[in-house]
Image 1 (spheres, rainbow, N blue to C red):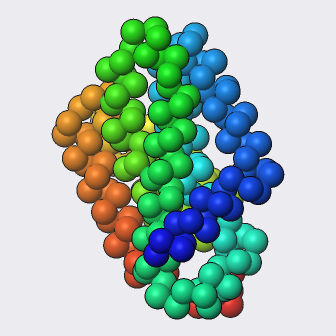
Image 2 (cartoon, rainbow, N blue to C red; image 1 turned 180 degrees about the vertical axis):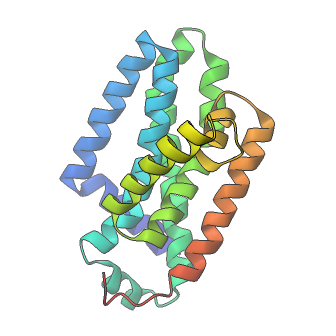
Length: 200
């Protein structure tokens, strides 16, 4: 599993598109955090979720998943390593991009999102392991958030993204719900990771 963690962190740091995206989003989030802490919270949360999902989905998109599973046949161990990398990358992104909030005296908001970032990352990475196609996953999440949680639930139901928003604002009950959704996503991913790769 340590080899998977090292490998995915190295891949994240050396692939030009990943590195450039990370730099651009970090700079943009840092600037937005200086101007509007609420907008920073939303953007940083979305980027952390997206980065985590891409860490897993890129293996299927670039057809490296088969090579990865040949090198490490225990797929659940591979998944756990990827979840750890997703949590580390997402939390590091939030920690760096939110430094302007500390300067602006918004330490509480910064701390709340820093606590929920690894939970969001694990949920996103596990979801990507189930769906395997990043485009489908992101469109599905966007549709779910807008229609089910936004229009129907009014962002007040204990559903995943509503729980993440509540946890980001410091609600301990919402953090517990978000953690529960992340655990459910991990269980689904552990079951789905054994699927055949031929169709991907």
